[in-house]
Image 1: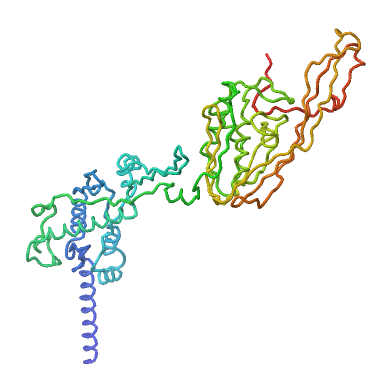
Image 2: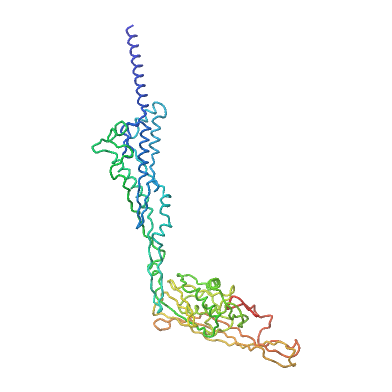
Length: 510
């Protein structure tokens, strides 16, 4: 009987103890407060009701975001609120943890409260799009200007000079964004100091906050509302072209100059030569780059236009548009050869030209014949071309050993007699003849390039063999059609297809 009574008492004690324990767990888990000692980025929230703690956190963040910050860049200042700069305070992790205090089973809530972290960081984020909108590229350009490339100039006496580049300032976004976030963090810390009265505790006790010696939200110490000043970090932007990059191109001096005359040229032809010269003037070729005269002609036609001037067609000068453009290619050809450069494509005119020796010209026929050369100097090459005082001058600037020079020598290897072409003229007496058009001799010409070092010939190579076809003399004969014919030349049927040279349009007979 005694044993049963003891057992009953033990069971009762267990039930009472369990009930007390269960009740205690319910009281512990259901406090509705932030666990004591909890601090969010220096702000003590422990012991407060959850809603009050979150409300206090929101108020403090709102106060910070409303404060002014002055962003100064050079001589410009912009006054904004922290919120306008794109700064925000992320409290999502802490809020989620507070919600978990009241979620789940009793045991889960007990564990959550027991293991609730005491220290919480306040994540400061920055919306850089807002910041970029405050200092857009247009503002940077108006405030600091644009970087300016260095310029290479050639003096009237052919000396190379350089106008230095100009740098410009731009916002250093890699440093600006972190600096702004850091400044916001400092502002938060300063706000926490302002909340506390001298000699106050750590603010970790229960109550509404004032009992711990803290000031209420919005209650600032004298001078606390003074805006924060932050200097916007800047970086120096270099232009793409600097004096250093230009000098690295190796354009050290004038290496060759060649000129041809325009004394007998009319206004239209001089305009065309000038247009083509302008289109190649200032052209810089990198090592290994190929110059294409066809592209220069296209540019000249589009930019300056060509005027009427004699062109070459069927071995004769006839009216057309663009006459004279081959004088530019021929003058440039002579400069390129005398600079020791490799000629990629070049052909002589169908008839000798007056401004150059035979074998030293370079014709151009749109879509058929081009002039191209390769920059094999090992350095960049600058082309200068101008028409002045009825004279076309081409200069090449680059680098060539000063003891090295090139010359050209042309030799006529064969003279081709002019054939006769007979045409019937019924108005003439039978057997009679009349010269309608005089013929012209043709030539076979070989041209050599001679390389000299210290004035001594070290190399002589043939660079071309050119044929200038003979032009037939046209002779009218009296009689019937059967009496016509040709002597010393090919028949009309075997005459090769004629192309337009030294121009872009023609022949133009009116």
